Length: 544
Ligand code: F6P
Image (tube, rainbow, N blue to C red; front, side, top):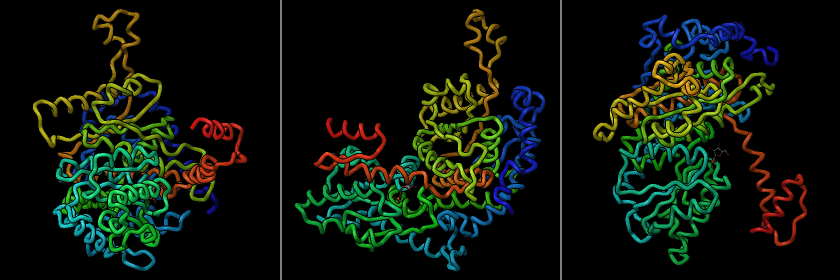
C-alpha cells in the first residue's frame, strides 16, 4: 500500500460526507426536530451507566450512516482490536498501548511480548491497597511515630492532572481526616503554599513520575525533601517514612533516596495521560479507599468492553468521536466545550485538555506524511453554571461553531433544597437555547424595539451532546474518563495520527535546559539565540 493510501480523505465516505455537509450546513435543528418527532428519543445511546442524548447535533440518520461508513473504511474496529490485543500501535515509540489492561479483571490474559501483564497489574493494585489501608488506618507512621494526616502528590501532566481531577471528583467519598495537596508547577509558590501550614511529622509525599526525570517534578521533589530533612534537623533517614514513589524507573527512584520497597510501579505501555488508574492513582486510592478505587476500575472496564464490542452506531465513544470529526472536518469547527454540571468535576476539563490535545495535537500521519485536514480540536470548559456567566455568550451568539458536551447527574451527592433542580434546569435550558435559539419574530413579538432586535436574536443551530448519569460515583467517573479516552482513540484512528506520543513537548524542554545556565551564570553569557530571546535573557538578568 502506498503512503497515505489510508488517509480519510481518500475514502469514498469522505467525498459523500463533503457533499452531505453542504446540505446540512443549510439545515436548522428546528427543521430536523419538527420533521422527526421521535428524534429526541431515537438519537440516544447507553453504556456503563451513561445515557447519551446526541439528538441536538446537526445530523440525520444519513449523516450517522456516512460517519459509520468512514469509521469502517478507516479500519476503526481492527485498530480497536489491535490496541486491546497489545499490538505495538504506538509506532514512534515502539510501544503497546494498554491502559485498558489497568482495569482488566483478575484472571484475564493480555500479552505484551508474549507475557501476560494482568497478574502484574493486580500485584501492584494489591500493594497499593495494602499501603493505602495502612495510611488510612494510621498504621503507617512518620519518622517520629505520628500518623500521616497530609498527603502531597508531586507530579506534572498525567502524573498530576489525573490524580487531582479524580481527588476533586470523588471528594465526596474521601477520608476527611486526611488532607490532600497536589504540587505540579516548578514555580516555587506551588510547593511553598502547599507545605506552608503542614506539619512535616504528619506529611507523606508521593513523587509521581513515569520517567522520574521530569524537571518540574524532580525540582519540587528535591525541595520537598530539603523541607522535610530541615525539619528533622538534617536527619536524612526521615525520608524513608515520608516519601514514596510512583514510577517506571526504579534506578532513578533509589538514586533519589526512596527505598524501592516503597515504590509503586507501572509500565511503558501506559501513557502519562492515560495513567490515572495505574499506580499514579495512589493518592486517589488513599483518599477514597481501595474498594472505591476498584469500583472506579470497574467503571473504566465496562466502558472498555462497550467500546470493544458494541456496534458502532450504538457505541458511545464512536458516536461522540465521529461527531467531533463531523464538526472539525466538515464544519470547520475548531473547539469543543466540555461543560460538567457537577462542581466535583471542576478539574475534568483541565484533565481533558491534556488527554485530548497532547494526544491528537498532531499534523503528520503514522507514516510521517503531513495531513491536509484539521486534527485535534481545542477542548476546554468550566463547570456549569459558572461558565454561563462567562464564555457562553460566545457559544450562543459568536461567529464560531463550538459543539458542547454537557454532563449532568440525576441525583446530587449532597442534596440541598432546590439547588439540584435549579442546576439541572440550567443545563437543559442551555442545550435547548443553543439548538433552537430565538428568532427575530419571537424577539419582536415580546415588544423589543426594532433597533435592539438583532442584538437579542439567537440564531440557534448550535450542536451539543448531553450525557446524563444517575449520580457521580467512582464507577461513573471511570466510565466517563474511559469514554473520552476512546473518543480520542476514535479520532486518531480516523485521522491516521498517533495519539500516544508527544514529541511536540520536547523542543521547549531542551531549550529551557540550554537557557537555564545562561540565566544563572555569574559571567555575562555569550548568547546565540534570536535577537528577541537574547534581549529577554539580558533584561531578566538586569531586572532580577
Ligand atoms: O512533557 C509531557 C509529559 O511527558 C506528559 O506526557 C507526562 O504526563 C508528563 O510529561 C509527566 O511525565 P512524567 O510522569 O514522566 O514525570
